[in-house]
Length: 343
Ligand SMILES: [Zn+2]
Image (cartoon, rainbow, N blue to C red; front, top):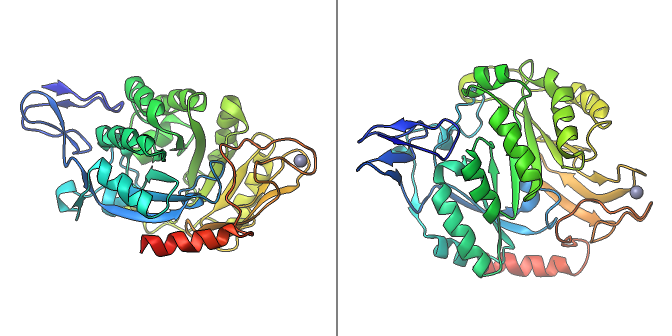
């Protein structure tokens, strides 16, 4: 029997068995990664699509995923990759070096682990980060934040940016809708990540399930650091909750207006034409980064007040890692060139 120390499930895996996520195995008395170097999806996108809004805005990232998850969110919108038997997912072998080469060829600035949970493929992600850093590329991931302290330390040590999903505010929510005992490991790791890596937070909102927790979630973020960008994602439930109503945009907007008292940078997306995708100065309300919400995760930056995030209204800096790629200038041409290169 081995104990998997990657996430707080800490699965005890008998010889011949796999852990809960089915991505860690005990074949010969030691913990092994299932499907090493196997990738299920690969996509070039703007970093805003992840979503990540305050890390080199406008830059291009190569996002990829594997398969499997340590959560079982009843509303999961990517269950076709996360919740199926890993052996059934069509995958392609791609070593860290090969993935880095693809990112360089496509003119990407970073590589991002998205869609399924990176903790289930942690050793691959850490090797990838080393290979990417050697070539001057940044690496980041989207995660549910349920790592053990040791895994969180390893992850934060190698990631340049992270977006952690804070799905609710109570143990009950995590127990009933996510399938783990309590929220505390996520809160502990959020605190840790906030001081060790560029951090953004996402909350998928589901009608009548967690829309009444918005105020409490805003309070949690406020206690960690009110300047952490918070992405509220209008979730269109799938998987075991596909019969649910879609969240009401006006109702959520009112709740988020109140939450502005606690959190400086709130974004609200996953519907076309959202006015909540631009960045406004929390002090003087000057628009610092204008973005167009295209629906889904499609968000495009179209104008920057200042490439380094300095507010022209009050001379206060927005919290920004790196500078902006300005789509309104000649750099658009460079962008087109890169697209041709990647095709
Ligand atoms: Zn200002």
